[in-house]
Image (spheres, rainbow, N blue to C red):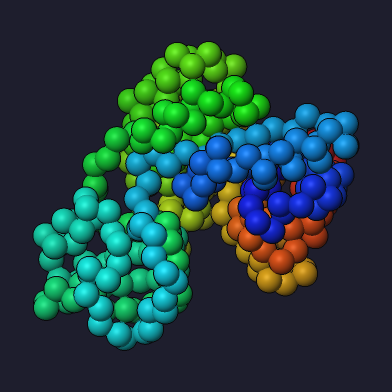
Length: 324
């Protein structure tokens, strides 16, 4: 399966139609940024594009789950080596308390690690790696486990609405153990969504540690390399990806590879050679699905990005089949 992500860059029916004609099989909607109800126009464009192509593509909803994100904020620049008061950033209360209690030198990662802050003796946060901070970006404190419920009230509402919106799959983020998946599956069953597929996103060390127990409880494992690359040193991320893929192959469980597959195409019309190799190798490792996120949701080249993804996947499949 080849997935894109819905967003402003592909909100036009014609763009979505072109993406489907290029070979895209489905789309993801990130509910951390907008609800199903707020996304009605976008979903209507997607339905119309699919009807124009005579297709019935998948629709995955990526729930909020236990993921930690900052609140609403007017975008502002965090400049390298600047010192800022933690109150300047709308951290969730649980994160704010954790920062207050953390020892000096504790790192705070924002926006999938693009921005790095470090706590100082004074309690101020020094900007180690800067950037522009926008609303609802992810936040993580490496080495500190912050306990939050598996599902938010918004998640439960979205599950109740899933059938009416044509949702075919639910992506549960930051899966930590069996209880998280059992809770989501229970909510799906109660809502009459027993036929909706459950995707378990592996993006923390707890998920990796409990992988053998998670595999039987979901329909597909998602190797979510954004936050997983914050949970482990980035140079260890490829090994983590390989281990997860191997476990899925051994168990006969489908898996998806996602995050930065064609990141350079967010603002460039062609991918890097390294990105193409990454996609090719994911297919050879046995990935059943690959997915683009920001490349199609907010990038400048959503249709070419899908085109390169499809062509690379097809080339990898041909190479794999030729080896048999």
